[in-house]
Length: 424
Ligand code: AOS
Ligand code: ZN
Ligand code: ZN
Ligand code: ZN
Image (cartoon, rainbow, N blue to C red; front, top):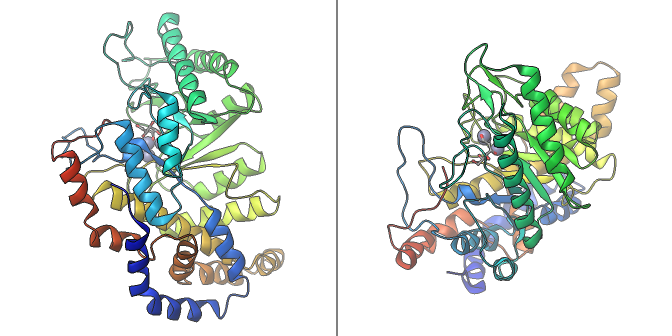
């Protein structure tokens, strides 16, 4: 299904008066509000193909209904999101879950929804049918060069799929690690990973980036071969200028200061992008902003501080991607909520009075510094984010419109209740 302009306009008309009141109220005290709206209008966040179906846990998967059963239907789903919020103009694919049979057709279909392809993701954390060697004991770090070669070849294949689709980056996340002391030689595992990544890097086109994702633990519980940002940055630095660190918010040990990590990676020119999500305990992959919205704001505060200062445009450059997947909400509604939370955090970060903050820092005025940040964080910017959407022809309240139009009901009618998306 496709959303028609009329239903969006009708929905917006019903909410206009209330929206205008809220916008006027908050804008009064924000002289740069037009500037913020313009930035929000440009800001796009990529939707991961694996988040369009209901996620499972190792205790089971309760699939939803009318999930996308093909790559075409996944693109259709992201198209719906983009029509509703005009901020989801990109999709991130996972190979082999999303093999494009005819890349040109897929590209055309995506373009008809206003979508481009963000980073492509490789998968060496599962064995695929017919594959010669198992990844049970890892992939790029494996003790056996034949396994490493198979994993390298897969990544090269993913790059080639990405080239055909117009992607500009490869994200490598490895489930390589060990669960017991003594199982692995750390230095050899790291060296093997570096050598394998070098081979992959050598196949990157000139204008591509390689995102090296790190993760503290899971699926292994004693060591992860790319376990933290230090190890990722070390690899990215050794690989070269096309390699960057990717920060998945859920991949840190408890209470890690992610905003500080982000600020340093940005300073070093090595921040590749994000997998946005939220968590209480570990890699929970919950809706962005659902648990720790202040942390999300503080991350954006560092981004605005580090990027705007250098004139970097937030609408390009970084890989802004969501990586969320869970088993309770309708995945499409959940993604609308994530995008909204990310844009709210961005808008609040744009509100921070940077001159005053600098002065407070120089004067060691701790109280003032906190006041400045929390004033921005506690400003209700929802109408500003909504105004940016309105100006782009999207819905004032995407979640409400999704429900009003019974989008899921229509998808079930089209696809059937048995349609299940590929993924974890
Ligand atoms: C896994 O924990 C990572 O977050 C990866 O980004 C992974 O590739 C993605 O979740 C898809 O499975
Ligand atoms: Zn991730
Ligand atoms: Zn993860
Ligand atoms: Zn995650």
